[in-house]
Length: 482
Image 1 (cartoon, one colour):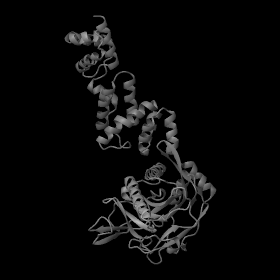
Image 2 (image 1 turned 180 degrees about the vertical axis):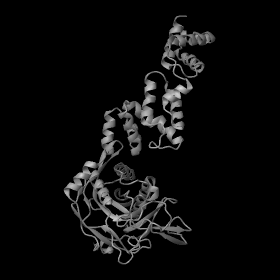
Image 3 (image 1 turned 90 degrees about the vertical axis):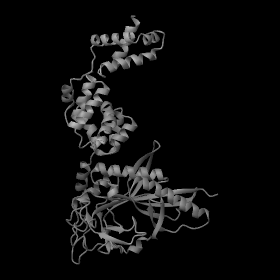
Image 4 (image 1 turned 45 degrees about the vertical axis):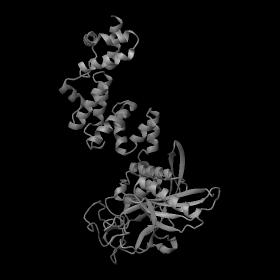
């Protein structure tokens, strides 16, 4: 039986986070009333001329630099001709044979091992509009469709990978890493459910050990990480079944159906000549100076890999690093804690654990958190000084997140600090021992685990304010003296 190797390449469309569209001044705001953010340019009215958005060009350059691409000094916009109801001009302004970026790569970690995925190119293009299907979630089965052109002419970059991906897991990790980098750059919001980031997945199979690629299919507009994995698994199973039965794979554009977790054909796959590309006559070639590229390079923020190395050197675990780097706001919060004097490992423990949990419960983000980084550092100081136990600090944290008060103010208002005075605690311990002489005898006979019960009684009487390690030591010392 023939064993097949999977070959995957991914084209990611990322919407650039500009306020206005690629070739006109219309708003890119998501969720506005249909067909309100439109003008003669994005509607393709006769005589309307496009004007290139400078900020979108800067964002495309940032993406290229962050992915180690060769940012080209000259690139050209072309017309990609095809008909679809949500494409009012009858063509899409894109880049074809002279894109803004060539080459590059993105490293991912698969089961702890680094793998490099090559980048073929990054090109700029305008988005089409959106079809809203009635009577079905997809075009199949819909009774009719409405057209919303608010998204027409929205600026996109298309990032095309080399066919270096071999599994559905690698594909997901690649798109996750790519989204993370674009979000950290601040050039894309990464909201896949809104269509800001979506993937076209090319899958082909070839017998293991052979060089030529098999016939590929393209699954369009997959907009979640889970769906990326499922669509690939589905397409691998479909193609394997066909090839095993001696049938051939037809080059097609397909669509993933989440409900059935299968792909289905949309149309035969077009080749580039089908689109009749030619240079856009209303736009000059885009010429970038070395000075402009270098200026943008100097503006690049610290990227996730550099942050990960810094956190690793500071003693954070891989789990902590992954959680902190999930969103830029989380990383910024931790960095502000460190800048305010917190020990990185101590701050990360609270950012990743209790604070993260409390913020989720109260539906706050790290950016909106009512306890500031300075407030968290103050809380860590109260723990370090012995005024608060870990349990007490969690209660103070919850009140800070709910009220916006600083930890010092919460502690002062409650009057509750950790009891670390030996004399005060010895009196409590003696009372507990006198009330539990049978347990004391068990500890004396060597059953030291019984001291946990006595410790619990002391903590109960002190309402959790006693210092735990001091309580245990005093219990054992007092028993030894009896």
